[in-house]
Length: 503
Image 1 (spheres, rainbow, N blue to C red):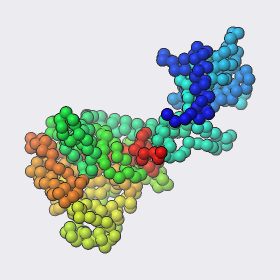
Image 2 (image 1 turned 90 degrees about the horizontal axis):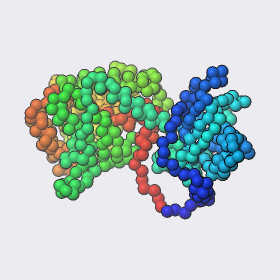
Image 3 (image 1 turned 30 degrees about the horizontal axis):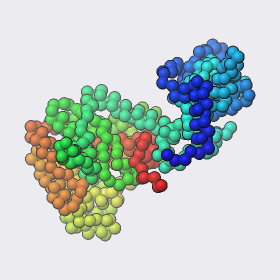
C-alpha cells in the first residue's frame, strides 16, 4: 500500500471520529429517495409550494461553512443542486452534534450523503433544498480533484488528462459533468437498433466467446487453454459462423451484440476488445441489406441526435439514405486511374512497390488488393458510401457475384474514412465454401496468421441446407464515436485497454 498523503490521513482520522460519535461511515441499510435534482429544478414552483418533503442522495461536490449555516452542492444521478444547512433546522434540540461535529468537522467533498428537507429559492433565485435531516451513506477517504467554475462558466483545474481519465474512469465520471452523456448515448444507439430488429421479429441470441476454431473473419486471435479438455481455445474474433448455423436451424433472423477480441494493434479506432453487432436474415441478399441498413441507421441517428445530419470533428455527415454505391475496383480506378482487377499476384506486388505500399511474402492477391484500396480510397469516403462487389480473394465467406466474374456479392459501409459495416450475400454452397477455406489454408501455410481455417462443424451445417441469407457486422464502437463526436475509441469505452503504468 502506498504511503498516505496528508489529506488521506485527515480523512482516515475523520473515520475514527465518526465511529467515536456512534456513526457508521458505511451503513448497509436501504436509503429510499423520492426525487432527484433535475426533477426539482424543472418542476418546483414557489406559488404551489410543492416539493416540501424531498429525500435526495448523492455526493458532496463543494461546501461553504459560515458558522451556524452552510451551503453545499449535491451531485445525484441526474445533476446538481444546492443544499442549505442550518444548524437549528438539522438539530432542533439541545444536541447540535450532527451539525457541529459531524457535518462541519467529519464530512468532506466526495462523501455520499442522504438528505431530507424542503425546496425553496434563495434571495438570488437559486433553487435549493433546506436540509432537515442528514445521513452519511459512504465516507470518501480519498480526496476528489477540485474542479472550479467561475461566474462566467470557465472551468479550472478540471480532470482532463486523457490517460488518467481512461485509467480512473470512476473519477472521470464523478468530476466531469457530461462524461456520462457519451455512454448514455451509446445505450440509446444499442436500444434503437435492438428495437428495430425486434420489430422485424428477429431474435437476440448468444453464441460462444470461447471457440475451438478461429473463424468468421481475418484476424489474429487471443489463445488460451482449457485444462480439463486439454485443448487450445480462442477468444472469438467474430460470431458469424455460429449465427449462420442458427439460420440453418430454421430462424428467419438472428442477431447478437457480441464482444469480439483481436490480438492486433491499437490505435484511435482499434481496441483489442470491441463490440460488433451481427445479424443474419434468411431469404435476403446484399441488395436488400443495403436498403435495410441505411433505413435503420437513419432512425438511429434521428433518435439519438434529433436530426439525420451530424457534425463530426468539423465535418458534416448526412445519414439520410439512399447511400452512394461504388464498386471496389471502380473506387480504386477513380483515385489512381489504374485498373488493377486483372493483375496477377506478382504484378500487384510490383504495383504496390511503385506506389510505396509495403508488402510481404505472406500477402496473397486479396491482401494486396486491400492494401491498395486502403492507401488510396478509404480516407476519401466521408459521406456514407457502400463499396460493393469485392474480389473473391478478399471474401471467403461470400457468394460469387451473379453476373460479374471474379467478384462477390459483398459490400462495406464507409463513413468518415472508416469501415463501419461489412455485409454479404452469404455463401450457402457447402462445396464452394470448402474450396474457399482450402484457399485460405494455403495462405496460412505461407505465413498469413490472419487466414481462416476449415470449420468442419459449420460446413456440416451448410450441408443440411442454409437458405439464401444476407448478414452484416456493424462496428458499434465506431458508430458510437460518430454519433458522440469522439475521435478516439477509448472515449466510448468505459474501460479501454491501456499500456501498463510506468512504476
